[in-house]
Image: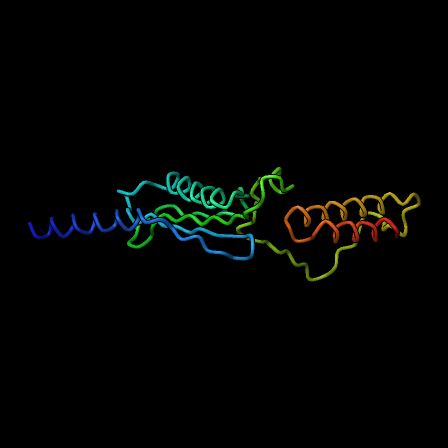
Length: 175
């Protein structure tokens, strides 16, 4: 009977601990993060409900300020099979005005879980001609296009401002 009450007390404590609202952590002036774990284990609400709860809290937090939450990144870990391996969800978001241009583009940027770097001991000869060898300069156009795409991607990720993007674009086009 004592063992049963101890297990029941532990389950109740776990349920109360998981019901607590996660704290909103400010990462920069307009960027925040919420991280929450479901300590209910197999009796918990599960990862989908955990994610929905955290995202709703982020949206409510932004709404209290008269703004909206723009997702930046998220990471999750499902319930593990050992003790202390709770389901977790971390959500990073930016709080912006409803009229902000960022509000129109609301997608999470995928980030790789692993980066594979292939190194060759000897440089491989190039089968395609370089831009200096190209009679029409087609490679230069392809290279310019890929650099512009990379600059635009950096701007979309928030790593370049619009002014920095325009300045770098102008430099590339003037070459």
